[in-house]
Amino acid sequence: MTAKTPISRVETLPDRPWTEEMLRESATQFQLLFEHNPHPMWITDLETLRFLAVNDAAIQHYGYSGEEFLAMTLKDISPPEDIPALLESISRPTHGLDRAGTRRHLTKNGTLLEVELTSHTLSFAGRRAALALADDITERRRAERSLKESEEHYRAVVENVADAIVITVDTTPVFANNAFLALHGLVDMSQALGSSLEQLIIPGDAPLVKERMLARQRGDPGASVYEYRIRRTDGDVRTVQASSVAITHKGEPAVLAVLRDITERRHAEAALRRAHEELERGVQERTVELSQAIEILQEQIAERHKAEDHLRRSQEQLHALSTRLLSMLEEERIRIARETHDELGQALTALKIALAWIRQRLPADQKPVQDKADQMAHLIDTTVQAIRRIATELRPRVLDDLGLVAALEWHVREFQDRTGVACAFTRSPEDIVVDPARATTLFRICQEALTNVARHANATRIDLSLTQAGAALCLEVRDDGRGISEEAMADPKSLGLMGMRERVLPWGGDVHIRGIQGRGTVVSVHIPLGKKEAGLSGAPP
Image (cartoon, rainbow, N blue to C red):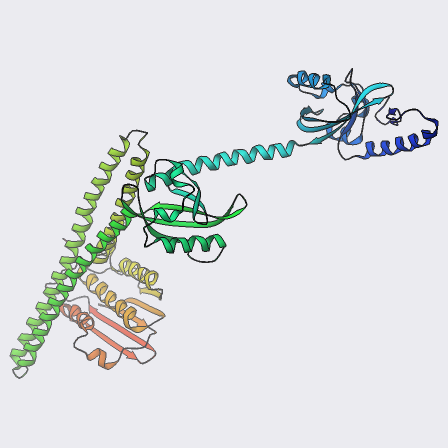
């Protein structure tokens, strides 16, 4: 018998002459259902397990021809290790429809399939047989295994990540990792789950946190990153940064929040801010002293204007003192920048090395202490960066290391990034070489000019140029802002403008400032190169 032999030998009804036509029609319908079923189907002898008939889907799915199938048994498509279970399953008495469960089958090319079998016991050509339908679930099982692996990987990541992770439904935690317990000082997961998250938050912060988490759960827009304070079970108050996103947990809207302890970072920022304020106060005090000295000298000049020779000497004294004060200010900036960078930087570097030494010697089971050491190392790195920034603001190293052109390019780029005002810098010729003192003067004048633009001009573009024409250097700063008025230029309290002019006097240079209302301001600086400066320090020894 071949796979295509009409299946008219199936015997399910008693032999009655008046049903012969019905049997033929039923056999024809069964033949069609069997042959055209999209799932593999076959009929096997329950005693020999030999295939008695197979449909086209079985031939295509397993790769055997119809003749090859009819020469085989169920054991031929079963892995050797599965044959005992196959025989045991067939030996069990069954009647009618039977779900044989999941089986593993081998195709002709050796591919292993997982199939779900449904069988029906019947009589075929006078023999006890079984009609089976196979549903290939290989891909489904592979997807299930892949999903299980993904879930295991996800759980491993969540359980071992340093940040605290919690899932809440209506602000009630339904999942939390070990880092969440450690952050709040909890010792058992039952303390975290089932009770409101508000119980762990400082009362003053709880309403805001609840509002934001419920809004995030509803899918409302708003800040996804926010800060609040918690009180640990040991009474310690910590500052937490939360990042939350709306998810679905077991079919319900929920919120997944990642919590990070930023207490130490906030303390460091506060300490750094206090140090910066103290430094600012020191600079302001020195600036006030300088302003007072200049005012005194101006008063002296006004009092002695009738005596020309005496006035000239007074002016010379004033310029010398101003030059010396500027020099002292520059030297003080260099000293503070160097001490801040070198001494504090070295101290923090030594602290980080010591912390790394301690970190390496911590026992492997001291994970919280290791994490805290890593946080402290990150805090040290942040402090070092802040110290470098402050030292750079006091005295840019690029001015001493690479010269005026590189320093101006750096400052213009930094100003543009900080203020958003478009800046363009040009120079002619390309290789301008300037001595340190003149370089310092031009750089400080450029700083003051850009500061005035940022404070007063409301400009959208600045064009800055440095040119060497013959034996002179020319610096020009042009903006498209509101334009400086004559009153502002003549105001004796305009110490910045006065300082520009004072800086160029040692070389007999000059500063010209002109403004057009609504069209901008131009600051032009001219310094001769041949004249030797008198008593002005420009670079560190």
